[in-house]
Length: 439
Image (cartoon, rainbow, N blue to C red):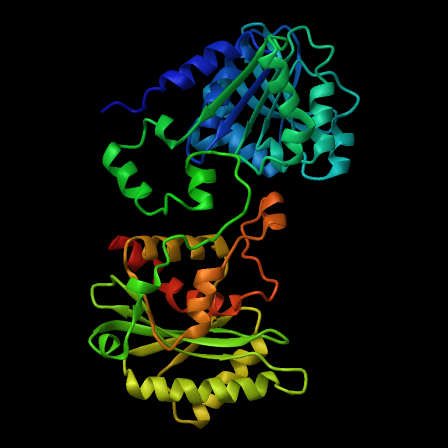
């Protein structure tokens, strides 16, 4: 068995050019090998570099240790093996490496905040590698470059996932480097764009299967897979098709469910929403069966206790109609509501339906990704009477400001019932691993 996959032609060329280039930028999609090829190129440069002191950076020192020193067994600590050891340099964490040209000290630095730049001042560095550079603070990035000005062989390595074209890293730095290169005035600038297709460690059948989970028209396929600098505009659910996904009452009654759950998003001034979600037999399809949606007006005095009673009454009816209903998943921040809901269900004799705090650790992006995959593969349906849910899936867009800051968040400005989407996801996301197995 061959333990390692070969490099792609583009990856090998980038590494070759890096040995004589002052600026090396690997940009592109997720799982494209950007970090690995920069580590290979930088390690080769360190081994023969004439300078003693070097720097590696990222959003935090923890990220540096994970992505540069370890990197799943491909980091500096593994490339140099017994020649590398952790040490302290003037009170800073560092890696000492016994290289062919003598000992090299590589200082570790986090660069998320503006004042992180102060911690790398006072030194001149022979080379620098910053991973996820566009997630760092601009002041830190600029200080990293400036600190190599006196190097005897100036070499800077960056890797990044794409951001919107107006992001500060392009506007303040990379666009100018590209413009100089186009004029033939940036000798030693080595830029490489990579995608998951460059990652030859992924078998072709696995790659096809994984790519089939994405809507190829979506923003995040363009950004994460194709590695393009996209702006957050347009719809999130490009595959949402009312003609094929909305079920008439007669069609809904024919579906046999393996399990059902309720997702509840609790609003204050926003809407409170509960969605009854069914998972069809074979763990194949997600069906939004029924729902409760209420957005209180200025004159209303709805409290969490009153909402708990109304939602409990809906759940009582759903549990009678669907005996397989097993759980209610409530926004994890609504602790008081969960307590009130349990009490209201108990009062109504609904004792077999458990109430859980929905686990948000995976993040909203993973929930949206699952919903998009189901819709793209024709495995997502809604009952015809669920108007707010239909409107939400048709109108949902990304929050462009949040996207420019590196966050994938739905626009929540009251222009569409976004609470219906959260509620539905709380209902079907607990089944994510089963739904993914039948993709």
